[in-house]
Length: 146
Image (tube, rainbow, N blue to C red; front, side, top):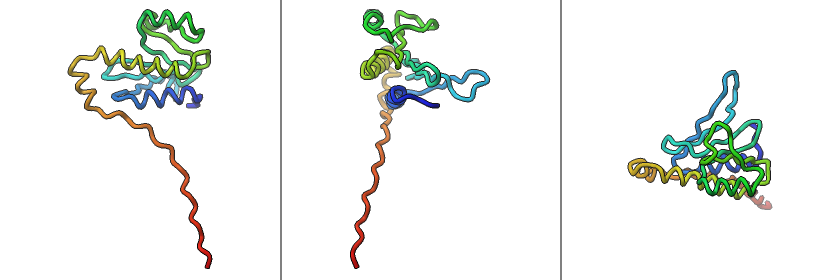
């Protein structure tokens, strides 16, 4: 998987969300996943493309989806999802990365709002996955003069 920095950033964000599970879709006769379908408590909240086109599909409120489609050329819809509730964000287009991250977090929150009380309680017990801290180079030891 050769991902751009924008896709890597979104993947790290998605992987760090509490209870988020990445379900890879590998087409027949392929060796690598085409997309990663992110779910929380079994409900899809994001679909991240990891090959070919660079995009993420997220859930969105209908009025906001219409506004975003008018504001950005990089926001549209995919034919296999209901365009009222789902938007596709082209990561190579005019959509700022911070906007894509914000919409991804919003999608997660929307799906979590629709969970049952029991599911919400179960999700609350799951710790948020921590992003790995970058490793720092160890300082060199000073050699004592003899």
